[in-house]
Each structure stands twice: as C-alpha cells, then as structure tokens.
Length: 226
Image (tube, rainbow, N blue to C red; front, side, top):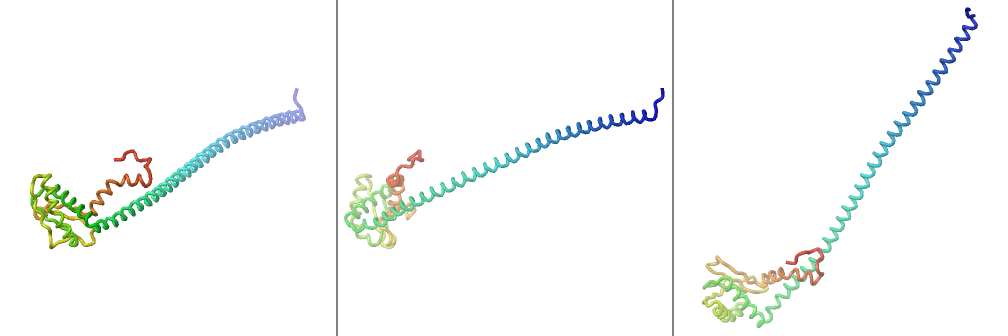
C-alpha cells in the first residue's frame, strides 16, 4: 500500500529528529570528552609548572642559605683575624718593650761585663779558630778588653786550645745597637753575630708559644705544641 505524501513527510521528520538527536548526543559526548581531556592536560601542565616553581624556589632557598653560611663564615673569619691581629700586636708590643729594656742592661757595667764574656765564649765555641777578630760598639771597647782575658781562659779550660782575640779598633758595631759583639775568622770568611738584639730574637722565637699561652691561654684548635 503506497504511503501518502503526509506519511512520507512524517517519516522524514521523524528520521530527521532522530538524526538530530543522535548528532546532539554525539556532540555532547565529544564536548564532554574534550572537556575531560582539557582538564586532564590542564592539570598535567599545572602540576608540571607547580613542580618547576617549587624546584626554582627550593634552589633559591638553598642559594640563600649558602650565601648566609658564606657570609657568616666570612664574618667569623674576619673576627678571628681581628682577634689574631690584636694578639699579635700585643705580643709585638711586649717584644718592643723587651728590646727597649735590653738597652738598659748595658747601664749595669758589672752585669753587662758578664753578658759580654758569655757571648765571647759562646762565639769562640762556635768558630773554633785559633785567631779571631772581635768587633764591638766603640763605647764598649774598654769593658770588652776587660773581659777578654777571662773569656780566653775559660775557652782554653773547656776546649784545651789557645786562641788569640784581636779587638777591631777601626770598625765598630752601630752606636744605636743595644750591645753585644761580632766575631770573625779566616779574613772574615766565617762570622758569628752575638748581638743582644739577635739573641733576643732567638729567645723570643723559642718562647713565643709559651708567651702566647701565658697571655691568651691554650689554643683549643692547636693539636701540636712543638
């Protein structure tokens, strides 16, 4: 039985409505899937950037902490250097005071004579030569001449050898020197300095650790004392 035009139009409308509904549902499904994928990708990108930002600020925080440690270490080192400088200045002032007082030894003629005699004998032991030239300050010549016989005798008693000491009357030690003597032999090829300043330098170098300990206490960071 043939369909009338009205029936055909009705079926066509029904089919169009079905297709339109299917298309709408499919579009909604595509939109929902696109929205889901968008949200997933957005979440992934947000998390990725979040991690990058966290990593960036963690690095910044570590850099700040490192800079603080470096700055603290530098300030501590500067403070230590200042303390060391003050201590060294104090030790040096004590040595300068010792040098100043060293010149006062020559004012006590009896005491200075014993010092000169000891210096002469020590110098002779180090040279071990039969002929020696002795140089002193011009102002000390008389006192040096007075101690030479006893110094030679003491040397002979301990070594068993004679020695001739010639006092240099043309060349002298500097007048501003604290005192002492200088011995030479073999035309000046060997020489022994027995200045009071040099002896003070030697003694101060040996006693410096003990002086520092006496003034500032024992250094807890020092493992060895020799």
